[in-house]
Length: 167
Image (tube, rainbow, N blue to C red; front, top):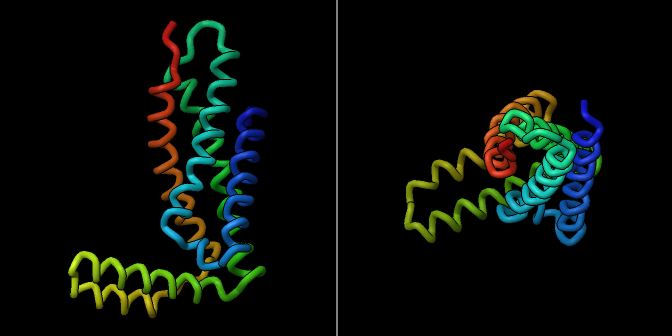
């Protein structure tokens, strides 16, 4: 693996952990806030772009789409692995009450959405959340990682289209 990819992936992963720990120390419920869960991806994007630009500057004769996807996706993969390990440790060793907290937050968010959108039929969904197993296991972390790879590749492809440099 390219040293820049690994380095920027570590930066993205460490930055994400620091960001999430900030919210966790304020209130563990904030880990499950929709805005927090989406906003940490900006940290990923910053380091994906940074790694791609380093590789682009080093390229002497153009920087193709294929060359641009590689560092962006590599950073995403490394950062995602760090993120998933962090969550696994948090749920299983640091605070074993996190699944119950997550369930509580999900139920509240679903009830709020049902009220705002006038969706009375959300009660079935809320009941499913109340009984769903929210434990973080190796199996569901692996499945989550696979879905993240798909999203990460799409994001990397978009960044590569923007950051490529024609000859």
